[in-house]
Length: 285
Length: 353
Image (cartoon, rainbow over all chains, first blue to last red):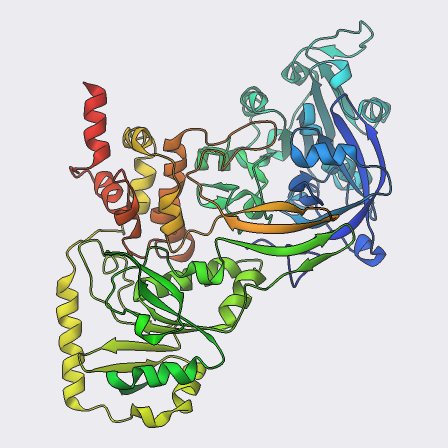
């Protein structure tokens, strides 16, 4: 049974007021939000795992689930990376710093960080897939001695569509991280990294020790097929390939039914699933 | 368990005293052959000679639409106005089992206070029933009840055997103990056993639910699902009438002229087109066949693997409601490889020609 650490035990649907501390555009339609729960005690005790999500509500617009992009190793502030795509996100983009939103959570299983200790970690992100995976990336870097190699493979369509561009370029300077970046096409003529889809980065990763590697994947639906093929070629076990999925959700706590896949609920049993789950449950991707 | 007797002519006296400080809900005849659970002002409205109501009693605990929060920028005030002291009288065994499933579901991992508060404030007075050709509860083993009621009334002609299932049920009896007969005689036991035996024989439809989880797996890619998808109207009726369907949507309804909203929770149906659609337009179940498969996975398979029993309680509501014959009976028969004479099997023949 999944563990629960909801901030409002008596009514899990009750949003907690939270302030937008900072926001900035990452691309034309993706914005970065730093949010702090107004009640300081609750802000600091909001314990989550990398890969979990929260529900954000905006009065008059509604509520929707969002991956947490920050790492629990940096408590106090919650970070989200959000694309403008519907009613709730349109309203979010209209908000100003210091405005109040509702936050509840954390929900979902998150990444099994305990099992990943002492292993090599390959993180494969495409486009907005960086939003949930940035959390586990920062977590690994903040607890660097717990993991062996940490490898980041990041793909974006074009340089202008790459989220966390400055942050990931800075990561390239770190000696304890193998960081490979790619864009499908370079329309700036200034791109210094690889040009090609994210799978073209795989040959750059040397000497993979498959049985001691966990691969973490998130990206647009089209990406999975090709990335999974690469990971299977590397002989990484199917239950060490982890991916985090998107579904419609109205509650986050296993009641509204929208995120049902076969007999599991993405909000309780996911959003992190293994490649074996995907084969086993057929509807996942 | 304590069992007492109540002569039928004493029933309204009993209902009168117990409904003094609670709302009494019971079945009432609505149309030629249709019944509904409704709040009772006049006991003569109650009609216990019914097979199934249009909507199951879930509407009493979680109404089709209700306000969860009255919300402003700074505060969300929980609204539990749908919760009141209620007595639900005349509920059949299948619907009682559905409530037991709901109890498990709504308390799994997280407790849903909107359900549990309404449930805690409702006393359940069950009533025996007689099956028609669409009742499947013997196959789902939900035709009798052992728990989940405060009182259960078995109709034995001129009187009821009243099974007392809880402390609160016993308290109700104690309000007017003079109405009840404590001694159960041999003759009563004989009549009860005869009733049980005859009722068991009255079931006309049988389904083997044991194989359904395996059949659902083995026939996951079967052409049957396409046939069903062609016929399905995606109207959502099967989910609305199903006593174990619990999906809902949440809407933020702004209050005009004020910086406030009512956060409204309303029934949803997994068979509706936009059920699995996310922002940006990606729809994880665009095809009707995929949505039907999810519904039947949950009814015939998912709950068996999770809770050890199917989520179908055999009430027969989907059978009498679906306009195109897609229901638990026909789908289970078709999965079992039987010939079924349904609208959708005829339709696909037409399509093939």
